[in-house]
Amino acid sequence: MIEKLELRNTDSLVDLGCGTGMYSLDIIKQVQLRKVIAVDPYPEMLKQIPEDTDSNIHTVVSDALSFSKRPGIYDKILIKEAVHHIPEREKLFNCLFNRLRKGGILLLVHVPPEVKYPLFQKALDRCKEWHADTDELLEQLENTDFQVEQDFIDYTHSIPKQKYFAMVKSCYMSALTSLGEQEIINGLIEMEKKYKDTKSLEFVDHFDYLKAVK
Ligand SMILES: C[S@@+](CC[C@H](N)C(=O)[O-])C[C@H]1O[C@@H](n2cnc3c(N)ncnc32)[C@H](O)[C@@H]1O
Image 1 (cartoon, helix red, strand yellow):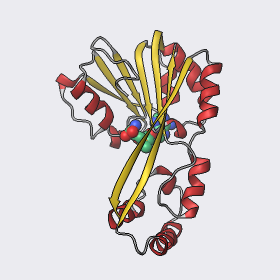
Image 2 (cartoon, helix red, strand yellow):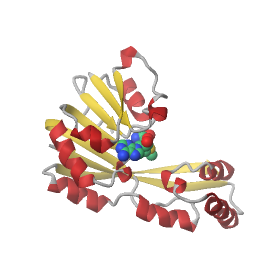
Image 3 (cartoon, protein in one colour):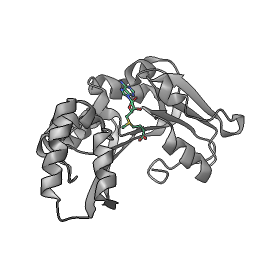
Image 4 (tube, helix red, strand yellow):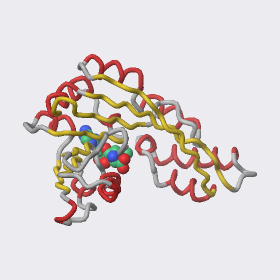
């Protein structure tokens, strides 16, 4: 993400849909930035970002679209695994185009609809409608006059089965939170049968990267 955003120490970075800010916090350990604006609609997420004046992280409680309409010019914008929460994407990209200086970069990092996670079938089906489609995002960004480069990264996990099952039980992905309690229980039974002879689950996490340059 640091490479794709071409981060340098004069940059202001907006982390849109930042959650607990874990990626911004890690980024500023590696690159000094002029300013980071961490935006999320949920104050309870932002509260987990340490208030440290040295880090230059400013938190803003706002949804992405409202923030994108506020005046301000930034060098770089990161949307990591949050774009699927914003239905009006074309509008969002148009507004973000206006928030970037010329040559500024918007980086989308997201998990596409087809996932290779060892989940139960209903959850896999839910991901197909829950996650944003990369080709559609690409087209929407290009329609907004961004110059777009596409890339991806595959990361292989190896997780003890019981640990992964506990993650599923606690709805570690937002697609799971959209299912009912009983659907999760039934899903875990399905997974228990499917992986009965397995101790550790190995699977690939695929992230699409769309780098949009103004
Ligand atoms: C899967 S988390 C990703 C958080 C962070 N970017 C990361 O990668 O750790 C999705 C985030 O999007 C936020 N979100 C939900 N709806 C949003 C919206 N309309 N605008 C901006 N962020 C939103 C959630 O609060 C959550 O923090």
